[in-house]
Length: 184
Image (cartoon, rainbow, N blue to C red; front, side, top):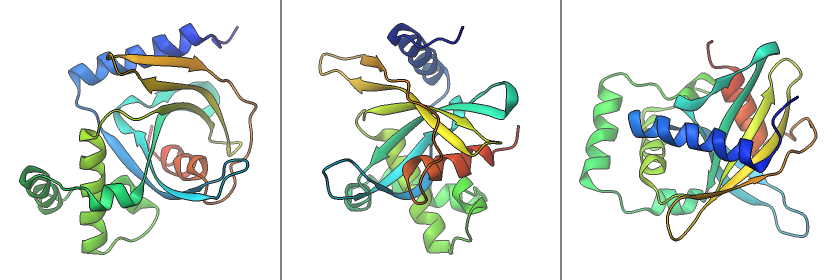
């Protein structure tokens, strides 16, 4: 029997959160995607996945936390001197963001991706989706969503959806390509 209750989603998130206490949050940039919501104008979103909390399951499935942010807010964010310094240090030390596996990045593009990852790591808590990916079948489904609560902590909600092939340029398409391309 597969866990589908809100409690299971909360436990999975708490396991990720406690892992984050030991390991720093490590959001990886998956790309700019187009978010289509019923009755709303499509919008571009910067898509991230939690790189240090990918669950590798049987049959080539993966579970991962996904966060969406406004690319304009990220690119216009006032970053501290520390972010600029760490961006440059990571680049000079040879860090190649996972996004570079999907497309060639210029030096300026690499710096932008690294900066976005660092800003996402330090951003105010954002709603997160818990997504399961079927790498072989090129499908995905949302298992749940977690929202930050003003009083602190998180509210987790079960929302298990049916398997679906992500539409090109969607957030799940970006994450599927990135996470399924991660070495085991």
